[in-house]
Length: 391
Image 1 (tube, rainbow, N blue to C red):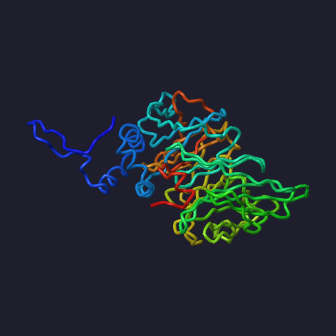
Image 2 (image 1 turned 45 degrees about the vertical axis):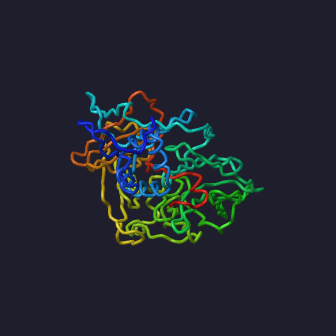
Image 3 (image 1 turned 135 degrees about the vertical axis):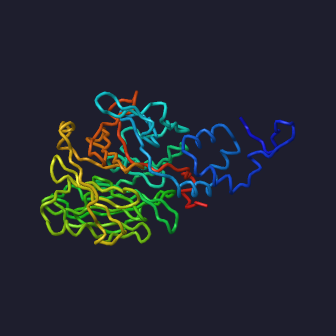
């Protein structure tokens, strides 16, 4: 259906104003506040709205107001992805598990085949998701599943070097997205040196940006916030030692303040019991001091060490003990204060912070082996992102 500008008829036969006679900037304001499901329908049903939503200015406005959602991806090699904007409405069964109706999900269907087979999700930034492979010759794939666009970032294999980790982020000053990769010399016993190289989206070259700290905890992919990726640094015994970040504007590594309480007990907190994430716009660290306890530390003021506070202490009840030994990763704090978490990569649970109860969260009609992550949906175009155009 194509909508045309003009005047709509009123009940008495007179011509009334059409919605399309509303000024462009006001329509943008209205649309930017609508749910993603509604906007997706607008793009499909009206060419005028499709053009408006595709405007880079609208993409920026919508992104500034977009709230974290739940991104689900099938683990069976096919690019089946879904967006859960809210776990409500939901159904609670007789044993207390939460079921999200399948028909409330927004399914992403790429314009063409996205080459992600064999690749894992690295991280997301401003609605763009970066996929990566375990080998140096595997390309990176950056896509926006909402609008179905993607770009392949070519790898340049480096002789006698193995890929050890990757990161993905954004420079607010230049509006450019960048992929960071870590290389270590092969056939060398121990990690003696960790080289870092960077690719700016839209180019085919990789640039060396110096050496990274030796013991970055790379497996989490880093945590992006305020134009920088953040990592925990561990010692030779795999225990917390410090924190570092990589500034995408300056393209350099620098120390970052961790919780002061962590430094008082060096050598006692293992990094494989920690995860970094962004909760309600703040950097946070979740830590499992025991199999039955999850502590969540939140940095209230960015880069201010004494602003770290232990906001949540969650006791894991016996009903989820089959998953003990796995990392409990918070995904988001819901509007009602509940915390949505992920266990064992594919098990979702919701913690009610009022009565401390924990319930499994299941998406009806979806296979259980589904990976989840926090995702801020956007209409940022890959083409515009590759040239740094945002408005």
